Length: 605
Image 1 (cartoon, one colour):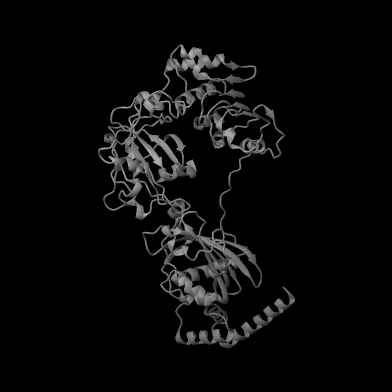
Image 2: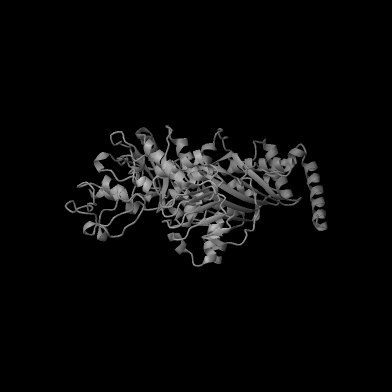
């Protein structure tokens, strides 16, 4: 029915289709099909009443040609879809009837067949990160077949129905760096055509002989131009379509086993529209210096990213649609050379010699280092300060933080810049006060969002959600330290008292002159890995006051000394403890230090 079709085409994640749209009934111009109306025209070769093309139509144009309107009776022909869409009777997901909007109760396999994995907006994720995150949560190992992108989504095939069932339960359990949930759909699907059309053993032998005749050993040159129409293969009824994964893998395997030192490869006139399967050449034939991809159907220069590991000096791309996307020749050359910096010839034209450094070693990012304090004295001071500060911050009352801030303190809050509305996400409580200058352009608004003086700062902190910080996750970097000034950055993970909300990370830039004069807070949602590592150790019980329990006489002395010295209670207590609670001695030491400090300031030390 119409709801099933709409569900298959209107999958969403947290970023689209808010609650006001999800349960919306058909109204206005976007009304669904009536039961009596045909849902879709039958495609040529497809079964009557089916939801997709039949086997014949799917095999008619597997090299990726797109024909706009050459079908019978005006029925348009579509780009080949290797997976096909199964009849809805083969199996489908059930909506979670317990109230979840995005979850699914389970997966029904289609008679033991596999499933097509579909991750909306998956193109923006690194493949290794995405698969590792899924595998870490999935109780069963899985091996994705033909991982590829289509538009903004990622697709792959699983031939194990049990793994597919486990994987579909991971939807919305992974949070990306922007705070959005990763949605995973698993649709029952028969094995795609490229798995059903493996070349037989005798076919591989004929292909090997054909490639041998096309190979020039003196130049280490292999000409596979128009390989599909080679008479030797046609006479044996062998169809080699390099857009098929199995065919490309067979070609690469023959190259690896027989000519691994290959230097020149010609793949022109093969109607290639993607290079996913050609990426294996980077490891199987690393000596390739010349690659001819002309007269194909490559539509974007991003396809070249899949083979940019090759150290090419000559590349041919003419007569590909991607060549028409550049406004001039220099832009075209720059985009291609960005991927192949050693390139000396493009489309038969000599290029100026590249300018750069020939670095053979990898450019992997070094592992993150720990905190930097500068000295043990500073380290001891900062750690003690942070322990006391967040002990109060995580308590029910943040009012005692008044003693930590200078009278003229300044505070600002920022969230990550995003084109989407953070007020609909778990960062909504922080959104209205965010002062991210990439988004807030008005100078008056920027100034208004600053919190001035310690009363306003602490009052604002009291309005923020109640939290619990993982002090073991803290990382500190001291960037400035003098006798009168200390500036440092602290970052870590915290969670809010409302347990249904995801954990978050923070980054504070603090500037102190015996007390805080500037406080910059940055908040974002924590990644899956940060959440996994956080709160491994039991959290200490928060204290409502930074001052330990004292006797009545000590409290009276502490209050008097704080008024006389004009220091806060924390520093007053330290001074009294240092003088062994001798009031006169503490006053003398404080006076001497104050005179010495003033002299240093006058001398500019």
